Image 1: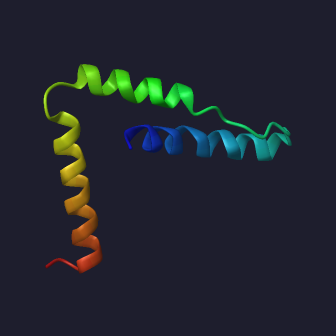
Image 2 (image 1 turned 60 degrees about the vertical axis):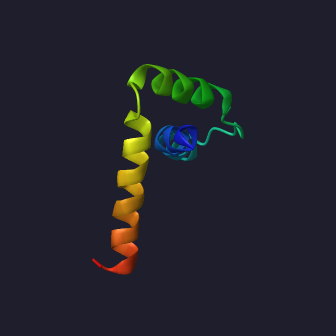
Length: 68
C-alpha cells in the first residue's frame, strides 16, 4: 500500500510534465516504487509504518465522520 502512495506522489507530476511537453510515453513502471517502499519499510524501524497507517486512518475517519 505504501508503494501506491509513493507512486501517486511521484507519478502525478511526471504525468503533468508529459502532458505539457506532449511526450507520448504511456507507461510508468511500478517496480521501482515497490522497491522504494520495501527499502523504506525495512529501514524505518519497528512499527513506524503501522503507526503512520493507523494515524492516517484515524485522520480520514475523523474527516468523514465529522469530528465524532
